[in-house]
Image (cartoon, rainbow, N blue to C red; front, side):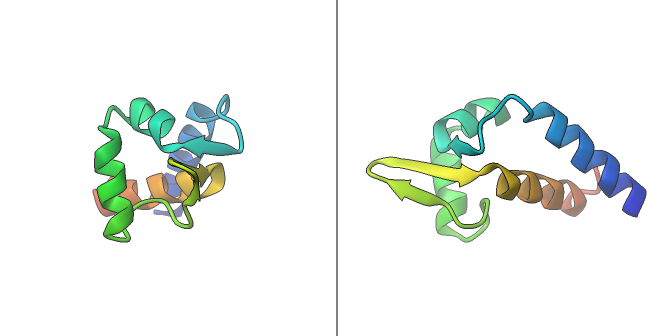
Length: 80
């Protein structure tokens, strides 16, 4: 299980390598093929990346939190 999680984390980090340290909700939604409203709903339910930062109308996520969130979602869904 640890090896699978490490491999998953490595793949996600590689996919996000070109993203800056802070990722906007819009960019993350496009990257994941989701509506930005879906991410907003997940944030409201406490199911999105941790510690979102709001600056005016924009919401930003720390890249490390996005990676942790994606790894945890992969684990929850059995690597699907």
